[in-house]
Image (cartoon, rainbow, N blue to C red; front, side, top):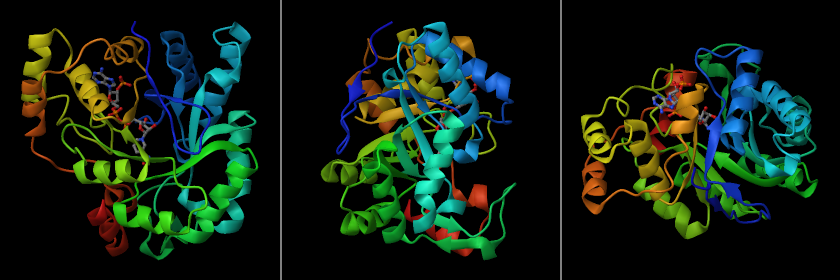
Amino acid sequence: MAAIPQVSLISCEKPMPVIGMGTSSYPPADFETAKTAILEAIKAGYRHFDTAFAYGSEKPLGEAIAEALRLGLIQSRDELFITTKLWCSFAQRDQIVPTCKMSLQNLKLDYVDLYLIHMPLRLSQMIQKTPVDEEIIHPLDVKGVWEGMEECQKLGLTKAIGVSNFSRQKLEEVLSIAKIPPAVNQVELNPVWQQKQLREFCKAKGIHITAYSPLGANNTKWGDNRIIESDVLADIAKARGKTTAQVALRWVYEQEVSLVTKSFNKERMKENLQIFDWSLSEEELDKISKLPQRKGVTLASILGPHDFVLQLDAEL
Ligand SMILES: NC(=O)c1ccc[n+]([C@@H]2O[C@H](COP(=O)([O-])OP(=O)(O)OC[C@H]3O[C@@H](n4cnc5c(N)ncnc54)[C@H](OP(=O)(O)O)[C@@H]3O)[C@@H](O)[C@H]2O)c1
């Protein structure tokens, strides 16, 4: 297998492997299934893992890391790049540090490599299910929450801080008050939602983009099969002796972003790593650039079609 390239992030001493294993599964995987899949991913060569308080995957990831150390699959936790996220129910100045510490406890780690604000909004209650009532959705106190994120980095709880699902407008708000600029914006990005303008803006500001749902989150509640069933991508794949998924992932990687993709299937997780020793031709890139564009994962599809949420989706 070709080596996994790494990228440097601003304000972060540790490089990030450009492909990470996502841990948000649908239907939600039980503890053992998630832990076993993560261990398999470590065996397959993944060193970057993406979790979140909201996914319920912090604990199985922590257990898988401990097991990988016990088994000698890795020599030290430092060999891994671990990202987790601040859930919207804790998005208040005084809750950020305790919430980050709670995630570290779930992960059984002293630090994470990247801590992200999961969504640009606050929920005034803990939630057990989605969609949620409109009354509990509030605008984010960007200044207070970002100060809390900066405190997490200063305390050494995380090596870097960033955001997720942030539009250009929201990033500008953060940049206007940040002492430490966001290292990463994790957003949906794939051949059918290419995010050209946001990519250009982030590049100009030195904010690295990580693509989530690079395969369009097929077979999940929040995604669809537009990528896996794309004839254009399938034709390119056939001509190149690759799979449709590999063509999609390679395209994402060629946009100078990193990506997190989820597979708990042993063969598919290996397949998804085979994208670094070949490249797409100009003609193939041109065909992909002409695919119809439509956002797949909306905040409204998760939280409900409330006015404020629809407004945030329109910005993204
Ligand atoms: N920040 C956010 O708001 C946010 C939102 C969504 C996702 N994320 C993160 O991004 C990660 C990845 O995104 P995602 O899980 O939404 O979607 P994704 O990676 O685009 O797609 C995952 C789906 O594709 C399947 N799959 C994986 N490899 C495949 C292959 N080679 N061929 C065919 N099917 C394949 C998986 O099934 P199998 O497991 O059966 O292979 C799963 O159903 C998440 O797990 C999460 O960590 C973040």
